[in-house]
Image 1 (tube, helix red, strand yellow):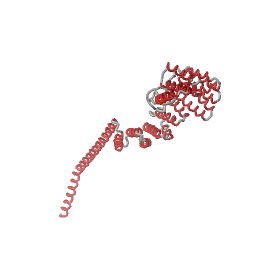
Image 2 (cartoon, one colour; image 1 turned 90 degrees about the vertical axis):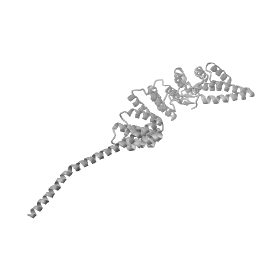
Image 3 (cartoon, rainbow, N blue to C red; image 1 turned 45 degrees about the vertical axis):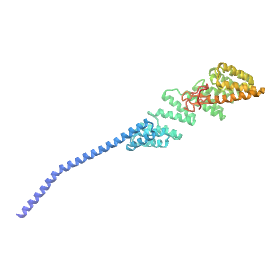
Image 4 (cartoon, rainbow, N blue to C red; image 1 turned 180 degrees about the vertical axis):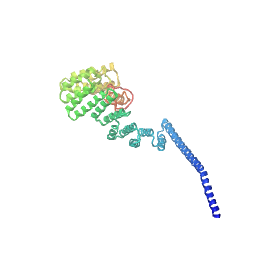
Length: 412
């Protein structure tokens, strides 16, 4: 009996314990749910704090950029990139900023990181390859720039990549690749690049003439004239090629097209023109034909060249008479300087010591003034140069220099 009671008591305790456990289960479940909710809220709070920090850093970076405080702007944007390393657009912005500031090594690292990522979209990878090519181009690493830009074969950055390649080939003076790139770009843009192509062939012709490869020079000139019929530079080079073949009459006939159609460019061939006429014993004829164009070019290089040859062939008195005629129609500081030069030589020939000193003082002052003022001016970027260029050294655009020299203010 006693044993039976003990057993019943033990069963009661077990039953009571099991009941307690059943009661604890929902409590424990509730505590777990509360803990999970708390953790979620805590995570949300941390995310909100991080997002707020990113937003503040981003806006701060933008404000600093707008106020042109680039150093501080970069620091702010780098902080955002650390908080969210997956943000591709921000990395592109940073890379562009680094390149603009001349920090090409940092720009290369940023864009290389983007191009090596496997989790970005193909268009972003193409964008990274394009930006990396521009970085290498800026750093002068032309081989790597070409390799990177050639990876961009489609999409939004295909055209800019081709344009960058064309720019790079011109920097390298790889004119044959430049011709291919210009033709490809023209096809893609449905735009005419034949003027540039003609200049590229002219550059090849010049290199060939210098290396005495006259057959290659002829082929390049023919290609330039095929690209742009009556191209001024190619026509000039065809005359030079005739001179190289010792055919002065053919050169004069070729340059006759420049005289008739593009007389403003005569100064580019005037000395060679006179040399060709001299070889044919027709020096006076060549000089007289050049004189006819001085009324329109009385302040340019043609006046300098004609004046020089009149002095050599006819002497200072005819040279002074020529300048007096020019001054009546197109007065300029250049013409006035030439007149003082002629007067100085006349005074020397006549032994007029008093006049020599007086004229020389005025002549030196005028030479100093005209040397600093006489310039060719680029119509694209305004770069001013003492000599005529087919391609502007400032902006690298072609055919942007007027053949007429000005006497404006400014020094390049």
